[in-house]
Image (tube, rainbow, N blue to C red; front, side, top):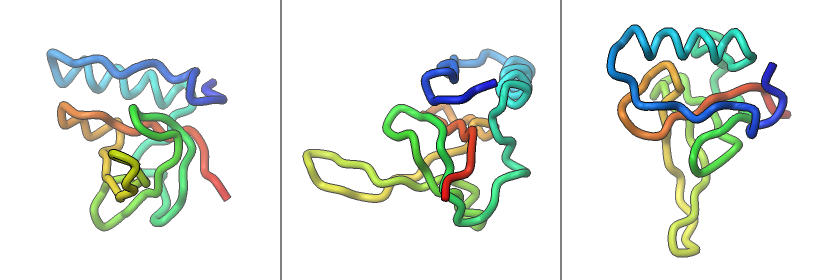
Amino acid sequence: MYKVSEDIPNIPRFKTKEEHEKFCRMLIENGAIPKNKLKDKMKYYGTCRNTDYAIWNESTQKFSYKRFKFDIPYIDSINHFEDDNGYDLFVPIKECD
């Protein structure tokens, strides 16, 4: 079971939908939270390239998180790992207070 973000494997590029679905099942079996279990406006601990914390937005079906570019903060959004769009994905493993 995933306990810290470093436990979560990097998400590879998938050649087929079946490969992606198999990888998603493996993540969920090891403690990743599936999209249908996420709660609106809840902060989650997990991992992606730029953060270990993100907030789920039910209406957009994306996570949001604060990111810094050239020391300027802004809010960025990212897909859940089940919604692979060819870019970085967030893998949540636990809710935060």
